[in-house]
Image 1: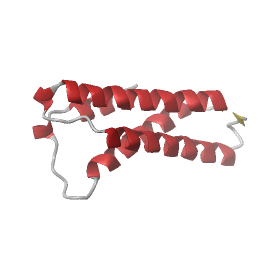
Image 2 (image 1 turned 45 degrees about the vertical axis):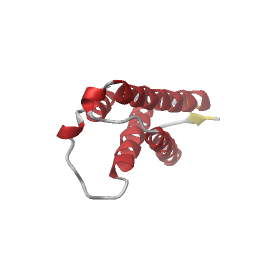
Image 3 (image 1 turned 90 degrees about the vertical axis):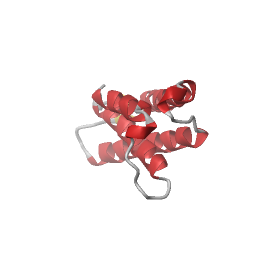
Length: 115
């Protein structure tokens, strides 16, 4: 829940308060990391899981990212814009977060993933 709040605050922070980092596509990398962490942490909160749960967590991450982008576009006072590529970065991050969780679960005898 705290990670989801961090994402919300970070993504809805006014543009003037966001530090400028001179790296190409830094915004997309931030979205990628935010949502990779989101799915990974969500799955760690209840490690014994099945394929349906993996898909639901991914769907939740994509929906959350989409809602945030809609809010960015709907609140012009933030000085931010709504970008489809941010949702793509959110989605890819979510998939990678799930993959990392799944790989970790395969190597751990304590966690069982059902097919």
